[in-house]
Length: 528
Image 1: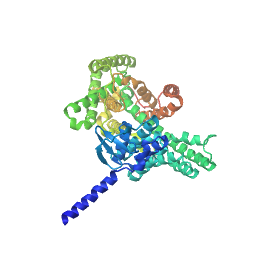
Image 2: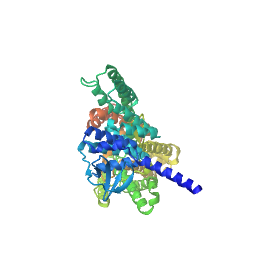
Image 3: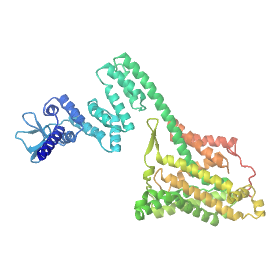
Image 4: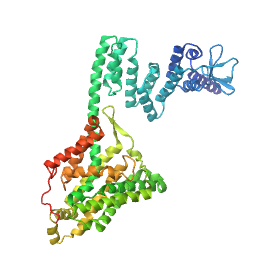
């Protein structure tokens, strides 16, 4: 008796699974007909089922593997077998079947339906990508599938996109009340791509209903305001990001040029050395520590500081120590050194750029204000710049080395008279500035490819930051870097990148003419 009961339960389960697997024949029959509108509508309704069997039929239609029998039934043919999606049965190929003709319109509908089915994928990334792809062009025929996906979706970000997709598709509904509700639903969006769609409703041959037009005007006003606020926040953030990059690039120069009076034209190549050290650390971890590859950047920071600082010490001991108080000679000598360093790197690594990949924890970004993406790598660089500035301030103001540096900067002869080893202080100070440049190179490697000409892109900007902020002033360097970053980002959309650079350079020239000491003047300086 128990055995019979178990068999009965098993039979019910099998019948239930078959019933779920089957696609209603009334949905399949239009595919074998000649009505193009009915066939496209049938594709949308089948996709809305969101079952593996529905996906199988759509894939067969796309791959020309769907056949129709004389009685109107359709089959998925695979070799010598035919699958009946209406019953879920697999059998022999029926006589007299013929391939279902697929024109361009139907093929496009099938492609859209298959991409829409990704809204039901188990991985969040695939669902999000599918929803974002549908934002570019949503078909009203996909509404049933989108509603099905919305009912199953648990992620708040994806649900918001799906709600906007439904409202966008309802803009073309025949009912004026539905269109008005759709327009009002879009008022909470920050997608600028909706503005042309809403604007078209206000054209002469657009929306006939006046209440819908008024709703469209209000929705456009809200979207424009939200987009403007998002653009403002984006410019502020990317201005801070650019300012942080300029600060990391210029901070070492603020020490070697600002405190020591050395015009170091090889400073950009010290940035390059830091970037290539990061590249070598990446290669080492890939080859010998693949399980810890994501940690290569943490090892690159002290390595870049040490390598660039060591190169700086070698330059100071061999060349620059003989040129203190002779700025023109230091300019010419360090310019020649920069050429030597660039050619050395070309000889070792080649003239082509090398790629330094972001660790996984620095990939992607956080979305704020509905559509502004703040990349993790730029957020990390902003935080890193804050840490480096704080460390430099502590070294210069709270350590014995910092005390000696300030003493030598303000009055070299007096410091020498009281027993300060000025030569050693010069060496350590130049090494510190060079090491900080190496840290800047680590940051730059996370924003783009690394090449022999990397430093040349930042040397002029670095000097502008130091001169504008005031020679020897750490606070002035910070303010100048962030200020130039913000001004540059707000000027670029108006004047273009090249004119923005020219305008900033002209401003700095005029500013230095009026205030040669920069934003902050250094008191008591003597480098004799």
